[in-house]
Image 1: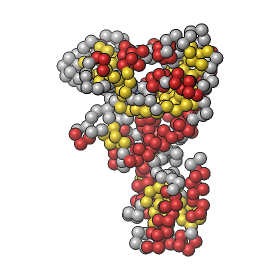
Image 2 (image 1 turned 90 degrees about the vertical axis):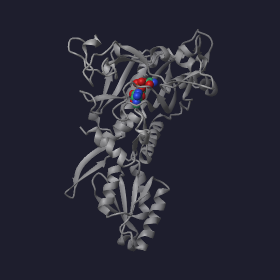
Image 3 (image 1 turned 60 degrees about the horizontal axis):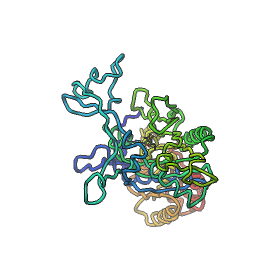
Length: 441
Ligand code: GAP
């Protein structure tokens, strides 16, 4: 397993991810996306939209600040908490479920010791994970608002708006990508558990009779999405929840887990797929039901069920990075490269003039660069020898490097080098665009 330190240091060195508020000593649980991180994250989000945007799926972008009433109705004010224990000696706080259990005694926290200083742990308390703030100048209870802990509630409270505007038939979905905030007790493991993160969520509304069928279909569809985008099958698995693991709103949940290598069994949650039943719609729209294609204030019809696949963009980002991290040898030299799927790679193609001091080569190379960058995220590099330039692109996962050399001046051909095989091929400049486009399909 690759160490997290290698991934964190590559991410920082090459401009993918920087620690949040770093110049002031850092702010735990926050990360800033650097230039390559932004490009790669956008690619992940674009692929998700591409998979989601069927004609009967409606996109949404709801507000991050939510009325306290929304989160009271959804059950988050009451239930969205983690069990917290405090060490009586060093005063550090931990999630109770993250403290190793003493065999034979899994319920009494006092028999477990602080993982930092071995002190006694206090009683378990429940700590609400939502960030609370106040809207406007007065900081009283009536001004309390929350930063949303999931994007899903923004979808549920807009259910009737979407139905009234578009008159969709069941089943249909509303999808959203956006930030979510949780005051995690112990943010950790790089992007895996942070306090500010992004989610990609689909709420798929259906007749309760069909909910089980859709749950199965969506579960399979989401696993395929990761595999099609290059994550190795052996690093992914399903985890079906038992009754005691379910969230307060769910009747069934399956996680897609990735082998991040964090815990003993190495697999941890990447995406959750839940049958949220009619829990949310019933709470936000009391007495409403679905009758003849409308959502109306009568309770003689049924309340649609909802199937929800929900994945953290940052967790997906981390899984793509870890899965792509590869070390091999090329020409007797060790190299590190990111074997990212070309659709996820932040830069698609790099253009090099073979030498930087021959004007006719540079001019030709600029022409090629300008023609490619209209279509693909393209980078220019004329620093150092070609071998070093290849290594730099390998390390950020660029799938193709195009070199303009002396032969180009004679016959308008260039070399295109493949990141994974490190092999070069000679092709006509006029064929480059199609060749790369085809590989990106
Ligand atoms: N709407 C359902 C929901 O929010 P969840 O399992 O709490 O369910 C869904 O979160 C996904 O959001 C997770 O599978 C994970 O990918 C991501 N996620 C949750 N908490 C996170 C955190 N603190 N940091 C990064 N990603 C997180």
